[in-house]
Image: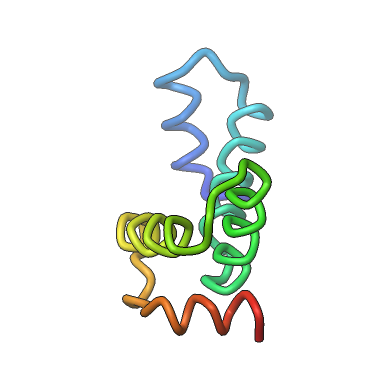
Length: 86
């Protein structure tokens, strides 16, 4: 069960029921609990699906990582490649 105060805040500021708010909070927490490596792999695969090329992908992922709620460490293109390709 997520933090009851956070769920209560979401209920008070939206039209969600307590059950819906708890599910939303759990989803958001799970998204942000994702490791940097898992995020990079999933985001790389997603961007490749839409035809993006690696130089563009690596620049975009590095930019996105810097803006996450809990900022990931700054990763070089080489480090990003190693996460993807091992």
